[in-house]
Length: 263
Image (cartoon, rainbow, N blue to C red; front, side, top):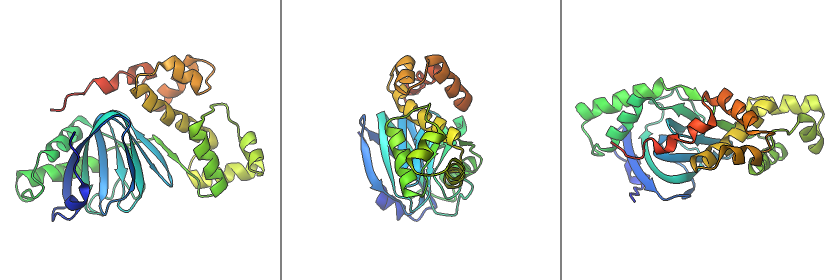
């Protein structure tokens, strides 16, 4: 298994540096942060990133943008091989200053793998520098994928959201949550949208999806996941899944095995 410490790489006098690592199943990286922006892509396996502000999952063909200075923990689902780049802050501003999941095109994937093969002190004026420049352009145009669960800033509400991720319930209602928190319905809905940027129903669906993705990657049956999450039937779970991701869960569960060999 290859493990490279990113700290020395951040000091290299290059605007973009690439790092590749291999991790065993269920490996977890304790909270840490970088002095550079990071784009973290799993060439094999699935990544789950969490911060004080929320949680993100990167299934196949997705990567996670992590701004400089954001403390984050990483959990690996299955055996994971990562290809990541560390970028001088401000050089690629388009993804923003918040963690996001970005779609990885075939070209971007190839660039990430190629970048990992370059010497850390590559020639920025030569072919290697052009690879890194094109990689930045592809990152700038990468679409944002709605695979995030932001946490509110209000402590009691954030704690309730974290508890929901431990035991998701697709039938949870605004009335239940507002009553438990001692808030009126209108106050709750206004506060929830203000602090998460989502309606309660949108957030609830996203949370269920993020819990389901790692289990699908592990090969758990769709029916088992649907029932464990509290859905009335596998069909209702599949409808929600396809509406949010554009593919049925049965197809997603086959993705992790499609690219187990890196070029």
